[in-house]
Length: 113
Length: 109
Image 1 (spheres, rainbow over the protein chains, first blue to last red):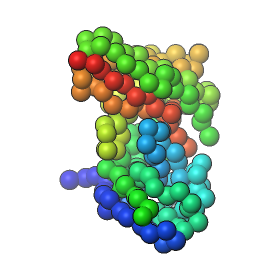
Image 2 (cartoon, helix red, strand yellow):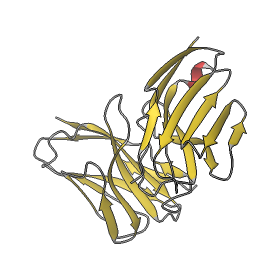
Image 3 (cartoon, one colour):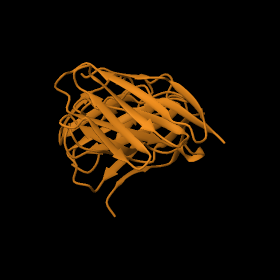
């Protein structure tokens, strides 16, 4: 089955640690995105990538980093510089930057303990 | 990037009533307008979309209308049911990957 997979579903992090959230898609999509969602809030764009080996900052990139070494993978690292990382993180992919449906993963809930 | 405004932020209706959510956009070059539904604890899913060469599209109880001159588009849900309760997001094209702020719809039985 084609789709987009995020792992883990739940993640706990101690303060001061970096953690990496996984996002994998087998849809052969060029573009991939990372969003942060706080309780009762909308989708805020962290980073996006329209092609392998290239990515751009979104609206809230500070404290996060990404890589796009393979078309199917777009991992997000939440660094210790992110002061309030507890949130729900969503990854998405599309076939093209505009004009097509976006497919979302089921999300990773990150909690700082 | 494209600026999309969505209203209202919350909407409560009685089961069986209609619900309307509106979005406005700024970039006249936008040509694709999707609507997504997000249920609690899940990722959003596309429920309907419309392209700029069409004024209205309908799929059973949901419909989307587009007014390119005024740069706004709306989601219409008729005969609402409790399972329609969710958060709904709009977008205008996708080049920037940005959505409207979302509308939390509650359908009361």
